[in-house]
Length: 266
Image (tube, rainbow, N blue to C red; front, side, top):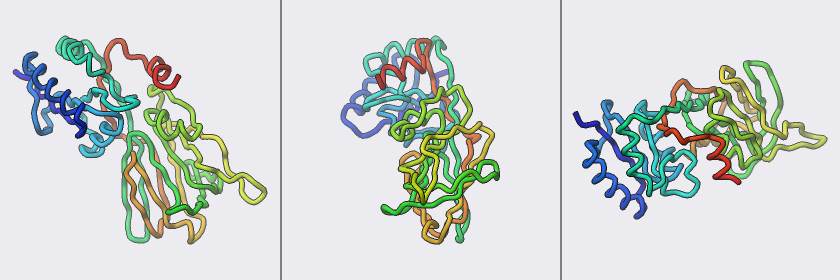
């Protein structure tokens, strides 16, 4: 019986050309590419960069089907396969010579005067003021007050997202085998009037983070989840915690997280 394969590609010429080649090679190898995704799909092949994979995850709401990426983007941290290695990928996949790496998302619940809203991200969730206004936020961990943050905002990332915006903010790179959240401040104020943590904070995966606007001017917030932004008015509280939802990435025998970090950042 043919294995059902769904191909998700961005609209660049390079990706479209690779998709055409890939479809032909899959058919010759006994793998059947489909134009639509369904629950009985055995594999999703994502052609593009990291942004394409994040769009895939959001569009299909963290699909349980294993995902493998062919990198046609810039960094390609999530993407496992180089275009010139497609034949090797098909061979190893058919031979079952791969492993599954589960990556958990991060969940935010936004409580406003008008209702409650929920978002899930694979990389990170960013909370900041609208336009260019700084915000003042009361931050608690497991209902225990920690700090009154003042600055542009905070970025809460998963281990998978530690190499994205979190890293640009000076946060730590985290091995994806760890279960935790990282809270990185964005332009924190540190002077005689305001006191905020200036380094990132690591939380166990079982902990939850509560964010409450300090004053009326802080209740209009922008919530960004994997690059998608929603603005909220009259925010009462945000609760952020590690999500139970995860994606499953296919990794081959030569995959080593720290080798990939070295090759991408050094």
